[in-house]
Length: 325
Image (cartoon, rainbow, N blue to C red):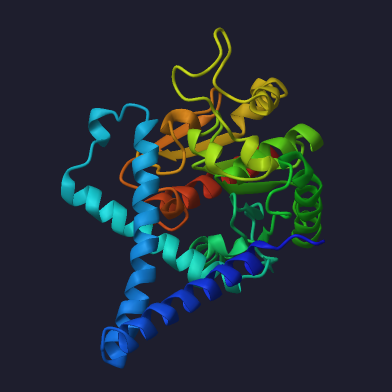
């Protein structure tokens, strides 16, 4: 039996939420005597409240395993509330509107001197995750492509051939010899697994956003082979003399040299609500850039983060011109 794609799964979840809202609304009207408008508000409000509580629980669970927040990144209550609102709205928009409608896309700008960009999404997502970055790439006339990593619960190593195919197609269509990869969360591990399998000859830069390079404790609550490959033992629960990363992550790290690590820029937030401890995103030998006040899903939509992503892409283009010269 063919497994559901993320698009199909999200549409199914939306249908279940709509039925739940309808049931609650009808109960409010027929049992409590509410008006139709009040029933509608009760149904929709209940679904939104459940989604809000799920999002809040992610922050609560991540706080249990969190790395210490540096003083310069600590948030006052108003900024913390603003961060929560941004993360909740990002999660709602992505899962309820953008990703259920998304399809992989390719845009080629023949006049562009910049290396093309391949966008890799994270666990449980699809190419619709990049709805805020792709307009920026279009505005800068930078060739780019998105790819859906399927099956949803598959082995991360098995995504490498799909990435290789996408890279070769993007290079052939753009006429360039190197790509920049921008990857969110699990997508960063996919990019590293692809480099281990296929080499780095065609890599200008790999930019990861909120990637659990050393695993995340919250992966214990995920399903699938890929979730198991992102697991990390909580502080004090790792075996004696054994690192907290799972065996797959340790093997991935052992398969990389200094040159490969130097190609990576790792963006992460000290307030990530999925990657915990948050410093798990710090990759030795890579360029690590820390942010504060940004949640996990919002990393792909936050204007501050995307400004720096675009600068990193521009820097990769400049480095490429220097090599040619």
